[in-house]
Length: 402
Ligand code: UD1
Ligand code: MG
Image (cartoon, rainbow, N blue to C red):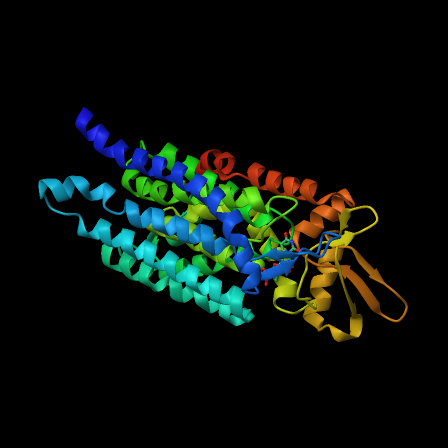
């Protein structure tokens, strides 16, 4: 029995030690390498600072590579026992591992391409879908279980379980698209992209640890292998991206993170629970829909506006004429105004000044102008408090027997 326990703990421990090492590597590597990014024309201007310096961008590619290297070196560890004792090698588990790495690796490449080439919106939707194909294929071969348990209140209509068939694959593909983009559009202030990803990954980590004692421990152990080095490299990144940011993480990081979460959610069979870790991102997405789909004009950047005199951030606005938006746009604006969730000013000529529909601006409407790091902290606090644990365990019993 003790021997079994050890086999179960050993890979996790090994992974943990590797993660600690890779954290220190990240922290040492970033300052040395960041000037190379400016030389390669990979930089952005921090719009919320006075200085207007060139800030190296897409440093997510550095942490992404370190993350992948850690996992590449780790590959044999969970399988040593099978290799040395020559007993039935778990090919399907091995395949899952490789497919997961392939999807993440693919997304890292595509994310970096986006940073360098500044791709269009439709590509941002297409890329994660393509990168998730290897994973879906493995899911098909290994599980092909598209059966879901119906929540209690709906059972009188649908029965105990339904087979979603192809739609479940569609859902999993969309999950990758959602996770990657949802993080990318809740962005624009120092430390927010990495901060939120860290809160999400730490939530997943805690969830995995709790579930290690359950029946599905293998899936959660698998997820831990990815989460530990992910958290380590992202912590290293946060150190330099926190206010005042020395580096930007770039879309590379957002894509890599979203894909990593989608991968562990799908292979770990907790893709529905996973969405509960994304509540602020879901709210931000729903709030953004009118602008994302152009019912309301959407500027290239929606990040808050910087006030040089006070050194504080205030809401950013979009100005347009009421005549220029369609009836659907007018209807949405009417609902949002009734719900009192936007700031809308209209003059006699029909010129409208309205805040950009982001959760960041929404917080600013409620708090008034505040300093940048305070705003990041408030948003991270929202992420922490919306934590799924509070929801999953008590709320789950209404929907499922637990
Ligand atoms: C997304 C958002 C956009 C937001 C941008 C900020 C949507 C549809 N898109 O676009 O509204 O303005 O992210 O990242 O919601 N920057 C800062 N401070 C930061 C982080 C970024 O000033 O802390 C600026 C820098 O100029 C940087 C640029 O944002 O170069 C990066 O923007 P990018 O990631 O290319 O924007 P998108 O992801 O396309
Ligand atoms: Mg971005």
